[in-house]
Length: 317
Ligand code: NAP
Image (cartoon, rainbow, N blue to C red):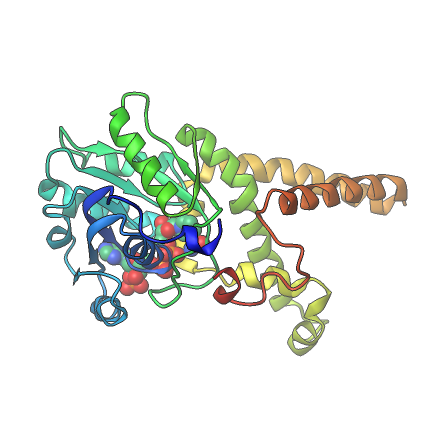
């Protein structure tokens, strides 16, 4: 999408949007909602007073509160942008303050557990439309956000079959206005897809960086010095927020364990190829995997620039 297509939209989709949790994702949403005039006002809620102060200093919300209820009152859209483990707590705080007709959505990286956590807190006449923007960086906090984070990225929405169609369409329009391509699927399917495309890769990165940190025969300084051999790409992922990722693995246990089972079988097959000198088998697999990387680049989800991933958030702007 060229830059001049990312200005204000013709008519705001919502009147007042409450964003709960103003970290990387919440603050990016606040920025793009303001930039594109997607809602008439943006109200922020974050448990941290320092974050609220920073949000006001950055000028990315009209109000910022440490209490969820203060932000939710009168909002026609409430979006939870806190770690998944905090959803139940936020749900309990907001429930009795939601106005009839309001839409509750979220950005959580797992979906079945989020529906389980929130359903009990959605009153009659309020619509739950869960969503997950598949976009992010390894940085956290309100200063890490930027308005183009969701541009040309996918956002998966997982409404139930009984969800009001108008509410689902509004959330779809909301994410499209944020620059995202929107796809709908069931929460269970979302969790399986993300287990292999995001959750297991993060687990592998956490594991390999942990293994390197524990090595005795190779010194820490050697690991850091020679990291350009591949290790540093894993360290970028393994620098992701510990709270967020702890919550994701606990909340998507079933799908992650299923994909890890497959991963372990394939790893054992690779081990066997190396042990028995099966060069042909290794070459065939590496050729197939290279083609997947090319398809990701062709579909605009990655750039062919060799140092991608090392430029910090500015690379996406
Ligand atoms: P983040 O930068 O750590 O921000 C989370 C914010 O929520 C922090 O300011 C935190 O305050 C606040 N918070 C925590 N518990 C709260 C509560 N009970 N009430 C109000 N505020 C609370 O996290 P993030 O990366 O934006 O991730 C937020 C959500 O987006 C997660 O559910 C994650 O699964 C999802 N997501 C993340 C990415 C990614 O790449 N980062 C991508 C897609 C989706 P404190 O710091 O004081 O705890």
